[in-house]
Amino acid sequence: MKNIDIGKQNFMASELILGCMRINALNVDEADHLIMNAFNAGINIFDHSDIYGGGRCEELFGEVLENHKDLRDKMIIQSKCGIAKDENGRITHFDFSREHIISSVEASLKRLKVDHLDSLLLHRPDTLMEPEEVAEAFDALYTSGKVKHFGVSNQNVRQIELLKTCVRQPLCINQMQLSIIECGMISQGLNTNMTNKLSYMHEDGVLEYSRINNMTLQAWSPFQVGFFEGSFIDNPEYAELNKCLEKFAESFGVAKTAVAVAWILRHPARMQVIVGTTNYRHLNEILGFDKVELSRKDWYEIYRSAGHTLP
Ligand SMILES: NC(=O)c1ccc[n+]([C@@H]2O[C@H](COP(=O)([O-])OP(=O)(O)OC[C@H]3O[C@@H](n4cnc5c(N)ncnc54)[C@H](OP(=O)(O)O)[C@@H]3O)[C@@H](O)[C@H]2O)c1
Image 1 (cartoon, helix red, strand yellow):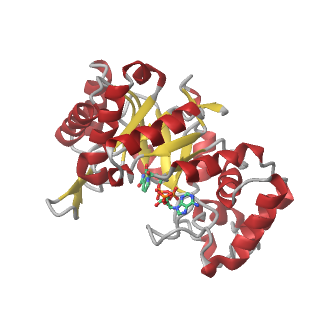
Image 2 (cartoon, protein in one colour):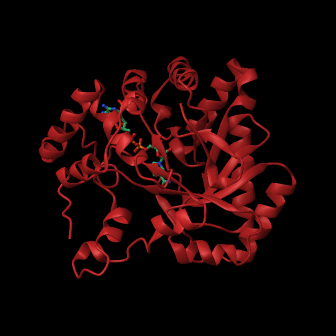
């Protein structure tokens, strides 16, 4: 699998990431099987958050790592912090305070049973954030060796620029929802100078900003509709898209999910795709993505088959 240089920081990682948000549905043996399957296929980066499964996802990953002690140094382990939940798992607030960031990383390291994170992302914008405090937290985590690289998730251009007024380490990643269906950052650019609703600056030109500023976009939920409304793969509400994906899948001898991933990676922004399957058979199907070569015309055909119009 191709590796990319995240943020042009000489931080090499596979273009496919295994997202670990749902692995708490597995037992240790099943998680071991999924993670080793991914690793042996060339996926060397694993995405976590302190909140996934209430911490169980990181803990389970740590239990799997205990079975493969030699693997830690060959893996890139990424986690996120900044979302606070109550005991019932409901989001109560966002917290980019120095204390929260540092204590969250320390708890993640404990659950993962590792001494450092390769990358840490601020999960969702905290409007009460003080960039000076974030900078202090990042400095402390960086100088103690607990975090090697930093980034953000779900943040727009101004929020990133605000952080950059104080943060000293490069912000090399922005993790955003992106799929054939949920591709506002692409549609917005295509509809520049139009008055339709696609032209609204929801994401503030974050796609172009990321390319200009060497921030690697990590596309989360490549197969989901909305915020966890289920997959568009084989979903009758997306019949046209599925028909189109099927056509390309057949011509390349791969699964539709492989085409959906290849569609994201065809974009010259050199993104990564975070897949969240917990099923190793589904994962193996996705791995066919590198057999798919989409021309410019093919790429737009898939985009249009999802119901997006061109100006
Ligand atoms: N930064 C953020 O705010 C944020 C938000 C959400 C997610 N994420 C990250 O992104 C990762 C991926 O998110 P996601 O899990 O929503 O993404 P996804 O890969 O789009 O969705 C995976 C889900 O789709 C299901 N699915 C159904 N049919 C499938 C098929 N044929 N092939 C593959 N999967 C199929 C999977 O079920 P099976 O398990 O049965 O395959 C699984 O429940 C997460 O693990 C997390 O790391 C980040």
